[in-house]
Length: 184
Image (cartoon, rainbow, N blue to C red):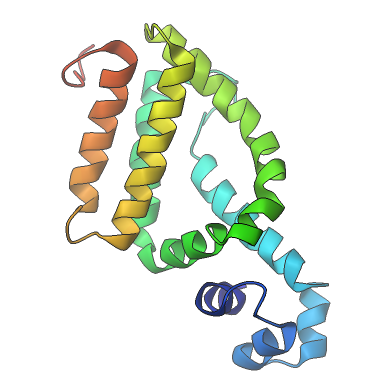
């Protein structure tokens, strides 16, 4: 999977063959097919792994209700995951942003994300948001944008600083606070 991730990012998903993946991984093409029946299955596994890595830290107790502490943990843990493997996320995003690749997985992952967005909507509402739908959209864009800035321009957008700014900004968007107050 690591080899496929690298090749899909460098050459493009559609321009990469199973033969190239097997060769670079140092295994036979037949052995590669023992692990994955096609390069589409490899891509599915790569995207699923990335999605699950980020959202495994959302609603930790899996009760369907996102608390303020869980939201803060989610943001902090997401940035920690990014810091720990910046190269992986650079490759991951370079694949997921390829137009034909994005189209191929978009509907499945939008469906998987529905419960997450629903919890997030309820969380924004519980925090006093006057427009939870718009706040969820804005915070989602802020979060995704910060990830992209971190992987493409970390020298201009330091990850540690972005983490704090994103967390504070999320709460400002939701509740119109100027700063996140840990005592509240």
